[in-house]
Length: 283
Image (cartoon, rainbow, N blue to C red):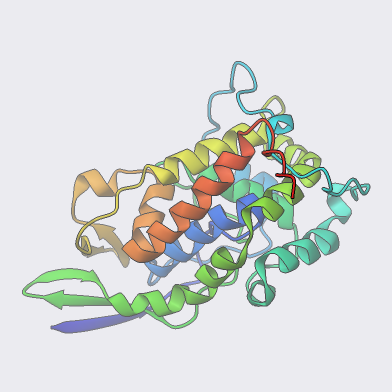
């Protein structure tokens, strides 16, 4: 068996760990970035407008499918005034650090937080990305490993060690607290989505679409075969390689991580589409 190590380049994008969105973003970032050994350079502070023009916009929805008002949140959820979007980085970062645990402080980039999250979520259901993208999270440390056994190249199981800090954030985040914060902060996400290039779009519908797409990702029984093409690892199976960006990112996390992330995403989706929380039982 031959093991290959390749450093991740500075290009890429992420699926992060940000409230409802942070979890979705974490999956994308960790998975896609890890398999880009020598990509081109993408500036970390790329503008939201640049990200919006890098890919074709989805067709506008005829109506709102998942109004944020239907999400299940506790009566004690915050009603504090929100900052302006341009002044929201400090408060949003602080809230996400509290929701994601101490490990998120070293991962989440502190500028344009909401805009980066929105751009990431918008990109997940697509089948391709443009040359520019916004990075919500720091690059995973270490080198991506690929093993070659009898002429077949697959991802090394030890890559899971690189994803551990991101998965720790996912595991730490409480779905109810996450959704409560997201619902309270929703006007910021909606504004960022419109500024991304969808003046009539509804961000929560796009978020649900991204979550549904990732939940539909396959869980391969064995590590899928890879091939190195022009410095990039691609799946040999054309049916797998042709899946959406978000689904391929889920697969690249590995079966165990993918299963854990799907459980958290399912819990979040249930809360986002519920009418109300069950009444507390009398004691």
